[in-house]
Length: 325
Ligand code: ZN
Image 1 (spheres, rainbow, N blue to C red):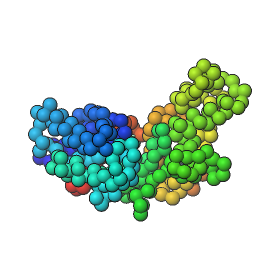
Image 2 (image 1 turned 90 degrees about the horizontal axis):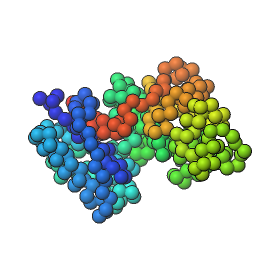
Image 3 (image 1 turned 30 degrees about the vertical axis):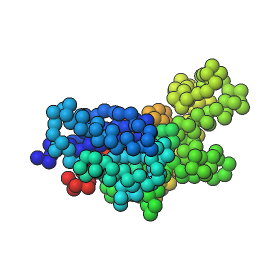
Image 4 (image 1 turned 180 degrees about the horizontal axis):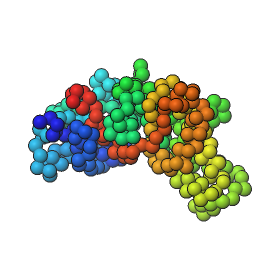
C-alpha cells in the first residue's frame, strides 16, 4: 500500500545534513543528522547520504521498497530541469554538480532537488503554519534572510530561479549598509540576526547608551540578537528602539510583497522569529500601515511552526508532488 510507504527528506547544510523518513501525511517518523563531508570536492556528500539511508532502513528492519523517493533541499541556485547545483562554494562541489543524478545512481530511487529556502516554505505549506493554504510566502529570518513564494500550491521560481529572494529586497534605498550580495540597504542587512547585531553595535559604539543591552555590551564587547530581544522584553528602551526599526522595515517589505501577491499567509521562520510576539506585534503594526486595504483584510502574518524540520518535510513534499500522491 502506497499510503504506508515513506519518503526520505534531506536538508543539506554546510556542516550537517538532516535526514528524515516521512509518511504521506507529511509527518516525521524518524529523523537524524550526519556531518556534511566537504572534503574531496564534495564527492562524499551523496555517498554518505545514500549510506545513511540504507543503514537506517537496516536498523529499523525495513526493506528499501519502503521508500518511494528522496526529496532534497540544497543551498544555492539549482537547474530544476536537470537537478544540477550551479555553484555552491562551501560544499566543495565544482560548478554544475549533478546532484540529482548522483543521488539517483547511488540509490536507484526517484530524486527531486529544490533550493533549501523553497523547501522550508513547502514544509510550512504541507504540514506547518500554512497547512491547507495554497498561496503562502515564507520568510526565514536567520543569519541571513531567505524567502520562498508559493502560488497556487507551487513554488514561484522566476525566469532564472531567483524568485523569492526576499532578503535582497531594497529596504533602505540610500545610505543602507552593504549586503553580502553586493548591493546596499537590502532587508537582510536589517532583519537578519547579523543585521540586528549590527544595528545594535553601531549605536552602542557611538552613543552613551544605558540599560541592559549596554551592560552586556560593556561586559562582553559584543551582543547577540537574542540579547537585544531579551533586553527589550525587560524594558530596555534602547533595545526596544532597535526592534522598532527592524519591525518597521520588515512590515514595510512584507506589506509590499502582500500588495503584489495577496497570499493567504506570510509565515515567519528562522532563529530571529523565535523572538515571538515582541517582534511580530511591531511587524503587524507596520504591515497594517503599508498594506492595501483588501490585502490587509485577507493576508495574515504567522510564526512558522515546524522549526528546523521544515526543510526535510518540504523536501519530502517534492516526491509526493512529483509522483502525484
Ligand atoms: Zn542583498
